[in-house]
Image (cartoon, rainbow, N blue to C red):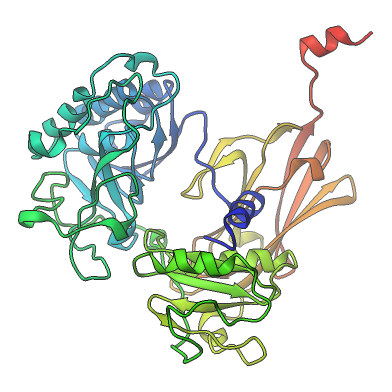
Length: 473
């Protein structure tokens, strides 16, 4: 997370943030494993059917979203008929993701993330409905809870909502969920947990009653966690500096010079989150945080600060707090975390980079709606994936630039500084298309000023609507 709430949104939207909106789910199939991400729509009935060939044995759910209840049931029926195993990697919420997951022959969590970063949330009633329920109109909420019961060992009393809305609309003003982690997930109190309620922060979890957990309730079928065949798919965090005596953890206001006014309130919010968590400040006065549900909380907080620093708004970033310890030293002194968190960057070239373009980028850093044709109303997502050998080696500090050209004139530049962990490492940009212009565009990508590849696209002028054209004399 980031500086103030406004700056958080800006940082994500302007630089490297994913978007969950899409026209359909995305499918990636290799060696008997099918990965699903993106936002479901009605076309996915046929698309999923085409993907579930005889060779698919495992389906990994990378937080697919969207879709109404009937669509969720139809997709789950296909998974059930294919007799495949299902794996959760990241949050699994809404209708489509939990229904597909529970339809798996064997069900487990992924080992690619910490157990606290993946969960499945079963809605037992909610006020989060699409404005138009479509095929779900007037269906009772018991259709949903009956499905949860049929695919788990949950009792009727455990899934029965205190309120019973129809799927057409909600008659309550709160959400009720059952939220399940792998039993090895721990709160900062050291206990296993279940979650419920509208705020599904892991901090809100309480110890499971009667020893019940995701396994005993049949939400998962095994305690084993799925390990990706490629270890490069595993999320790895960065180290943080040793504790200092700069301040007490709960001491407010923060004693950092030139700190933005809103950062004290942001820090108060940060202190409410469970461990692991990180709070980073920039020499320009910005503040950034991340929390337990992030797969790499330390890296995320530092990366978000560095992105703003590259825009001239930070000029330097340091951890202030990590977990329940203060680790900060004044900007006027040497950074004790620099050696631990920054490695010299590897020399990367064209053989190390693959470049993709599309209209959207989802939360799992996957390009959606792949295309090289855009118009002035479009959004552009540019993703560069870096790989190198040996796969166990971190890539170090890399300044990645995307230089945008129309003809021979450079019209725009996107820039991000990241501490590359082991490969693959992904860097993405979502530029303001109005700053680029229209016509044939070439993008040259550099890492630490070394050319790594190019991509071309076309941006067309905005087309006037029929009504506008009719009004033109």
